[in-house]
Image (tube, rainbow, N blue to C red; front, side, top):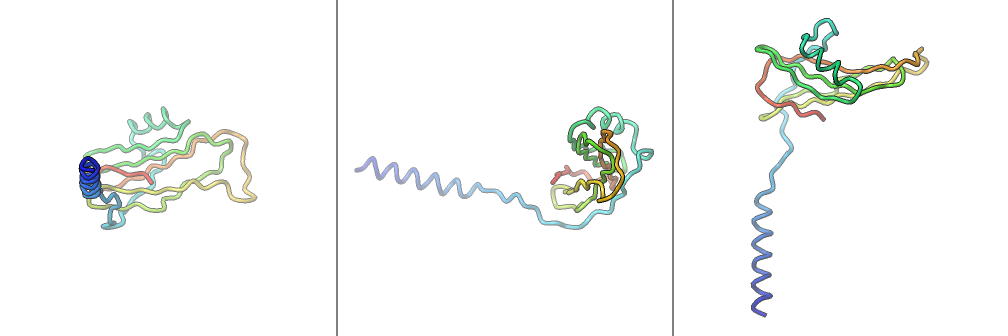
Length: 135
């Protein structure tokens, strides 16, 4: 009987301490960030090389310079052309930058070629010393 009470007490203490260590992961949005979607000719050469190496598979990259942060997302090999990518959200929290993009397929009735494509997007924002969370 004594042993059972001791086990119950230990279990209760463990539950209390475990409950105290739960951390809230959701971050509150501070503000939306202004960004520019870059044309291929505007992408820094070093970042272009990384994209070229990874474009056949999905990828998520960041690339920093002194005054800018570049965020790149690719959706891997697609069987046709005509894809585009929209930025649904790009915002700052206290600890991070969050980005959410969406791959859009060819529009109905749009003429597409049966040639592989590698849709990706590169956005440029002012430099912030924060990590990027891809949603």
